[in-house]
Amino acid sequence: MFAVAGTWTLDSDMRERQVEALPALIAGVRQNEGFVRGFWTEDVDDSAVSLTFIVFETLEQARAFREAVLANAPAQAESGVDRASLRIVKVTADA
Image (cartoon, rainbow, N blue to C red):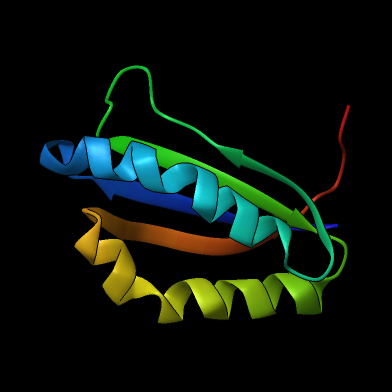
């Protein structure tokens, strides 16, 4: 399995819009081929930071998802979400 791991900075002035958009975002992510599981997190020490981990069956599926996320940068910016990093990682163990 492979995960697309993202680090995001959230504009606190747009927090309500981000919270309202999350259910539709999650529903859309679930529709991606090979989707296994997704996690959207909020840093407990800094609520302006969010980490995401979206897991796929294959490397190709993870790459396709990452490209779609990169292409969606304008919509992210409209919601006050700024990408700090977006990596593909190999899942070597889970529990």
